Image (cartoon, rainbow, N blue to C red; front, side, top):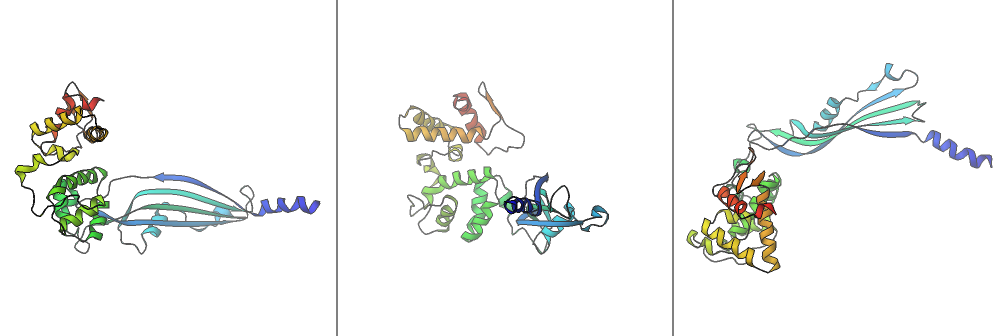
Amino acid sequence: MKKIIIFPFITIIFSGCAYYQPIGISSTSVGSQYERPSGIAEGVSRRWLIFPCYNACPIGEDSLKSAIDNALEGQVGDTLANVYAERRIIAFPHIYLPLIVRSDVIVTGTLVKYNTKEFPPDNAEYLYSNSPAKIWEGLLSLEREDQLRRIKTLSEDSRTKLADYANYMEFSIKDGSREEILFLTILNRKPKKPTKAPVSPSSWDEIECNMYYCMTLLSAETQARKITQLQKSAEYSDQAKLRNIAKAAKKRIRTCSNGTIFVAPEIKLESGERSFLEYLCKIGELNK
């Protein structure tokens, strides 16, 4: 009976003890004409404390700087951004009376490489443009794997506008063209009705355009006609299209009051976008 009681007690004493403590989080946007993300990295710095001297005779260093240096070692990156750091302490045999203590600082973050002659931005200025048309044109010359990689570096807002633009271009895409490949990359499907010849600008108003960005490219009269059609329609699909347009529009403004929209300073509206937003505000679609 004594052996049965003593065994779990000894196991608990000599099993060690560990706990984690978050020590820092930083967040910033990465990707401009000066730098770009190049991967994800994790680094560790470690310090050992041994009885009886503990902090008087430590082995190693558990600093944040050492952990970041370890993360950058052998990686393609000049610095680390969006860093999450935590401290892990392992004590043996017990946290209160340890013979050995190991203290780790663990960091995880985004590798950032500054653009230089040796590491140029690959002529990717279009990635920093607010225009989905420019992004579309810039991606056309790339292979599909590179298109996917570049699209992942875009902000969520830019990816949404690029998807809207792809839907808008759907009926002007030739079968087997590079546009079809890019369309497949962005929306993960082929164009529904590719045509043999591009659609001329004069016929854009006749295209089935029911996405937010696509609507901003139409004339004011066509915008009003299409929105009115969606409002009057009893079809669930049409009501869903109207909700999606309003949802996308609300993301572009701060508030809508008495037919007037207020836009955050950091939001850059495309040509024709403001008039469409003001129209949606006046008819009450942005206050639902």
